[in-house]
Image (cartoon, rainbow, N blue to C red; front, side, top):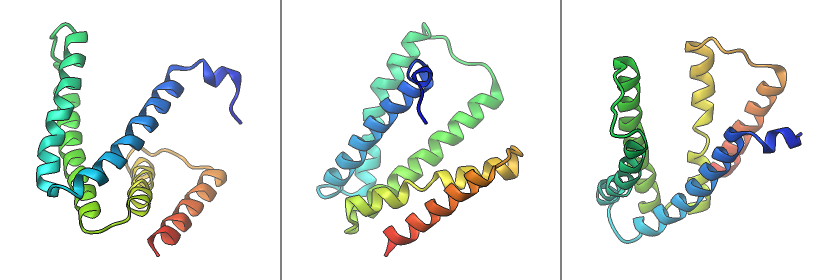
Length: 144
């Protein structure tokens, strides 16, 4: 249950912004994939991300991070994000229904949960496991 306290947290509003941006991103990705190839979409996607990166760098007064491990994780994140974005552009381009492709590819948190349990040793409650069960069922239903 959402409480008034949650509405005051930064993470909640950042999450809402993320949902709004990614929702619009999926729609634009589908529209763009009807016009150009997944390769071109991914290439141009990088140009769209560049202004955001420059603004964020400017907010840090052009100070670059120095932690090698954090940099490596972030670069790997960028590579995986790029390959994942290209794959969703290809899924849309190959005739996938935007509602279905977006829903199915939005199941990526299942992988995150599995990796968090296996690598980070995070624990899941029965309620979490039930939620995962519903997510898997949704994946199967949307894939039909």
